Length: 420
Image (tube, one colour):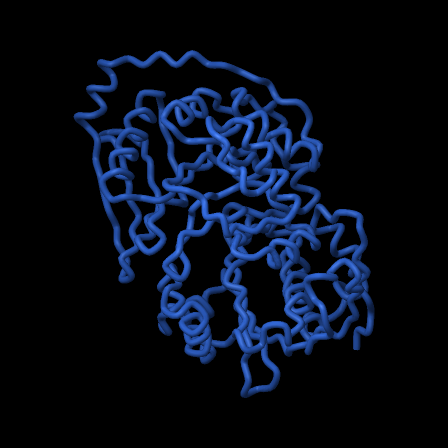
């Protein structure tokens, strides 16, 4: 039996290590004891979010036979509108559960009464972990202690992968602030704004990217190279720097000179490839004949977005051509949202994305792991969105502060309704 307490206080938790220190006796316990949630929480900071005592669920790691239950939960909660269709497919979920890079947690009141679930995906080559799919059946809202369940899962994951996964992240919906608040309390802090990225219940929604770090990634493994950023990234940087004390970057204003003959030659050698899965999601790849350069991204037709962008170029003209092909495609198939993480050490790339209409909406330290250098490099999230941001958006104060900083670079006041 653990029988220990976690006392959350007003001091902001910023790293995995700090949170595990708050729950030291629990984190040092047996894994199964952690999932038994045999610990006490101080709920003082949760007033307004948890108004009454809640029932503590049983937390279990999912087994393949739980796949059907998980799909039923997603279909039931999202009424068939969940934009990641693999979560509605039993065979796909079963494959995920069997994959060592995925963990699914089941929340139950008893062996025959499942109230919700929670999924995680490990990205071992990047030493990152993605948290997603935390869902509770509607009839159990305000009955189940979802915060305690989430904390138990977090301790399990952070203890299990303390030296393997050095950054955890999640994209928090802005339809309500509870998940943003819960994750922020335990150290997953808002760092980038993703306007109009998703579609739930046939309505466009924005997300906020939250991250938490192992302290070693920031103090020992972050690249020693000085970030070189354009002026328009400075507001994003200042928001992040205030929290993580990154130091001063170098501000540059590159003059991009493009060679039209080189551009014309590249256009003649451009190759396009689309790889679709059974759910009509696709990876789109732009490449250049007889070159190792590429620009690839993931298209989710249900959210009408492009994400998971990755690129490699040898010259600025190649990136220029890739971006122009991307813009054509965004217009042709009516995409709502696009995002790309751009190196914080390549100001010409940043300037080219900016000049092409994409905005910097988050400075993310240590996002990209460079295996050959054995270090993590900072990235800047550039994105594009179409349409207006819904006035139903709800944000915690930290996210409002992020947007207040970002707003300084916008040509028009997009966020008046947020009172930020």
